[in-house]
Image (cartoon, rainbow, N blue to C red):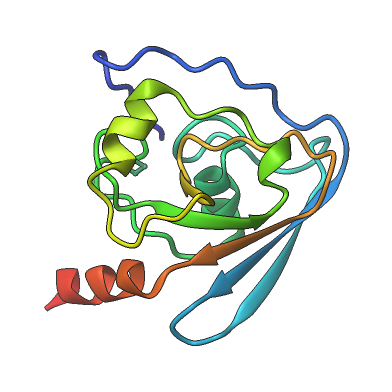
Length: 140
Ligand code: FES
């Protein structure tokens, strides 16, 4: 169940109304996972904003680190939206503040829990190496 950070303004993000695909690319292993998202049947509402990249990844079994539970209070869910970024909800000041703390920032950087695609275009989302390393270190 997604938590709520009372200090963060609720983001208004339009969820997709049409089917689209998200290709998650694991930078470390090079593995690509194509996730078809049909808003009529896809089970949203697990983690982060409803319909967010973290929400989609979680339902599809794609692992993205999310230390704060998807409430825009860390930067561990940092991903690079390499394709389709223009179809995603705009980042808020709160997201930008958290992103500033993330390593390896690029113009394609987003917090997966705050980034909601509208489904107009397919997406390619890179899960950076450091995200994977952080997950591994967390298990040691
Ligand atoms: S999981 Fe913490 S900001 Fe996304």
